[in-house]
Length: 197
Image 1: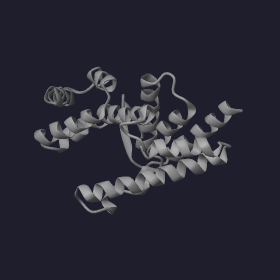
Image 2 (image 1 turned 180 degrees about the vertical axis):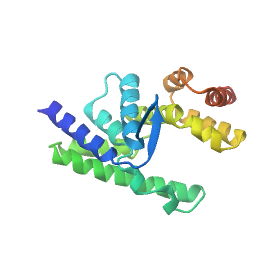
Image 3 (image 1 turned 60 degrees about the vertical axis):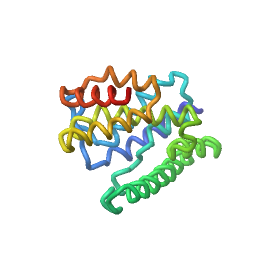
């Protein structure tokens, strides 16, 4: 039955991401980073798209599947290195989730749809891809903005946040206003929101 394979796929994705050696503290609890991100991204997608189908929910869960296995440091500094790293990562995530989905019995059409969503194919044209992008931006804001703000000059923080907000839908931007953020992160976000005008 379809629900059973969805449950099994989610469990396999979560089990893989639970092996992340990187940890984040969120709401007072330390968790494996990619497991936490997958759970939060899934929650945001469900909030943004209450009608989300299984493919969208699976893509949200697997968007960074085993991401830590290919660190950013393995690619050159600068934007070209970053973009290459990101492309390779997206393909790795797509391949890894396809293996899981096939193992639990998903048909080729669903597997390929989830892969396209994980690769963000159709960004700007596909509402499901936008929902994933929105969810990822919101997860970044709620789990990493405070740390990011503490490590970078103020002006760079505002610029990065402006770029992040530009990628988000109007609905997701409104949700960002309501995030429970530490004071410094909140101030940075509000400045970036004003600058995005």
